[in-house]
Amino acid sequence: LRNYLKGQLKKEREDIMKVAKENGIPLSEIGLAEEEDDDQ
Image (cartoon, rainbow, N blue to C red; front, side, top):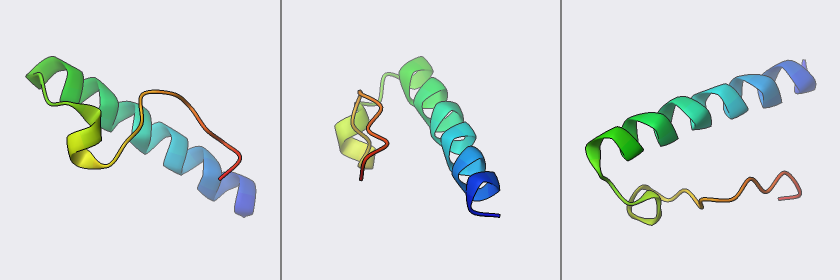
């Protein structure tokens, strides 16, 4: 289940980043860093 949830989160993040990029919204403004950081 944990891996499933992590996979869902990663997919959500990718969708959010794509939409933000398309609309010119800085990722820092929505609380996302540009780089993938799986350690935290």
